[in-house]
Image 1 (tube, rainbow, N blue to C red):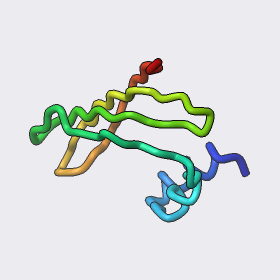
Image 2 (tube, rainbow, N blue to C red):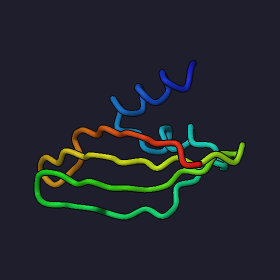
Image 3 (cartoon, helix red, strand yellow):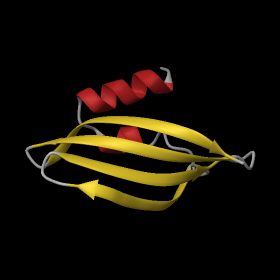
Image 4 (tube, rainbow, N blue to C red):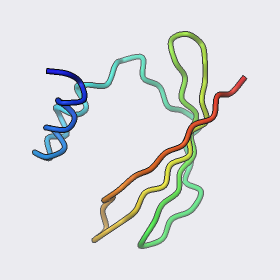
Length: 80
């Protein structure tokens, strides 16, 4: 089964352990911070580092419903 299929199945089944198991030990997010949050939305910014030495700034928009994230969109910019 592909990683995409595992993640989709884990999402449908709300199986966080299976979803987390798809994350590599070298997956690194740092300098994470919340830029804005209210009852409806949360905007975060962080930096991701990759094994090849590259880094990306990631901006994420989270839509909140009933106190939980229901939808997320991200955008990334390569840092030089």
